[in-house]
Image 1 (tube, helix red, strand yellow):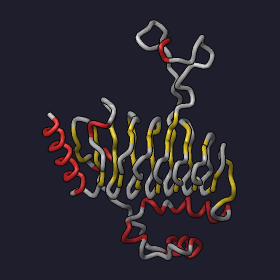
Image 2 (image 1 turned 30 degrees about the vertical axis):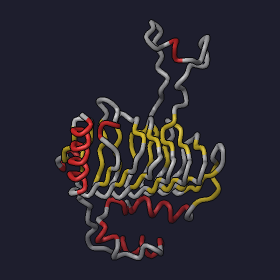
Image 3 (image 1 turned 90 degrees about the vertical axis):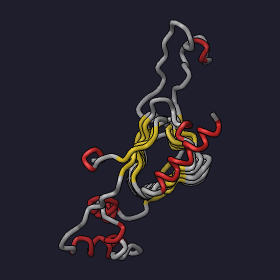
Length: 239
């Protein structure tokens, strides 16, 4: 049985690699009936995956030691460090019952639904080592979350947050430039076209992108992973 599981894991690792995805874990580490959808260029280290339905965008990487609980979406070009916790439960245990212990609703006649809305990350989000994002929190595109920050509320696009609980320290760009970058939707462009633009100079980048006769749209392949195996989604399913 152990040999079969090893060979099965090896087969799917190679299958994903041929499609531009690096997944260090074993598909059996996914929750029963859970589905993980990933685009080309995604790299996922050895992480704990508890989310039931999660999509991860192109070129995003998640370092080993991270834990993904109640989270439904991670955008493209995200950089997630080691030991990050995403979608941490806020209400996994009842506070207004006799006890907070799960014995009350495990194999009993007292149902308890503690979960709330899943967390979501926009595109180009950078999260430092050992940071925590609580469930229900929406992190805007371009945001930066500092090392060991605990994020309990929504983070605006391009904000830099730090602390416990996390608060906005500053913004990466001016309000005008933030609006321009969000309107540009640059994360939908193919890498080949992006790399021909002045990426180190955001103002010049926006100006040159606007002057393009045609803005191409990236056609990233998309894969679905579950305990049963992997398959490539059709383009219509990936929208």
